[in-house]
Amino acid sequence: MLSLLSALAAHLATVDAAVEIEPKKAMYRIHRDVRFSADKSPYKTSVAASFTFRGRDRKTDPVLYFHISPEEVGVGGGLYQPSSDQLRRLRAAIDTEYEDLRRILGEKRFRKYYDGLLGETLRNVPRGYDKEHPAADLLQHKQYFAWTELPESSITTPEFTTLLVDRFTAVIPLLHFLFRHI
Image 1 (cartoon, rainbow, N blue to C red):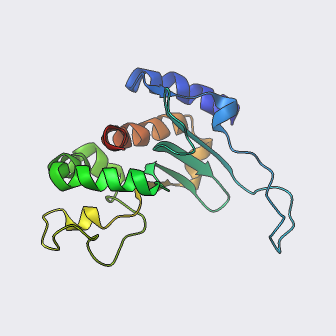
Image 2 (image 1 turned 180 degrees about the vertical axis):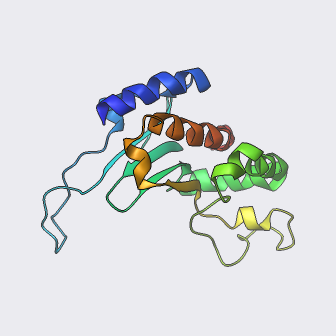
């Protein structure tokens, strides 16, 4: 995993110099927190990593993320658990700049790998916004991320790093939008 993260760092540096991967910090620990779990297995059955842009915090800011498990290879990026303040600022930006976000989500490269924004949504438009707003669907989001899966067989191919880089490259414009407005 550390070798894969080092290779990703080298490739992504050519895509966007602001993406920063410190392999040991990006990788999630393999030990499970079993304190409140009925399953006391000490280790996870997957490996995962997340990283963000230089000067940002992967715990609170938008990230690029992937995991490899026996069930799936998942790749994506975005803002998974925004704070209420981040969500308020993001919705305020979408209120006036929704065309930029729609353009990003409509880009050919993005649509090639992702099916739009995912995550929890509100049933109605948030208070303070018109229910007929042209970006009502975007304002209803409580999470802003994109996600896709790769075939499990791709892990053992020489192109695996390239497959990850292609998907990260497609989602980086979404992260730039999120960073500008949170």
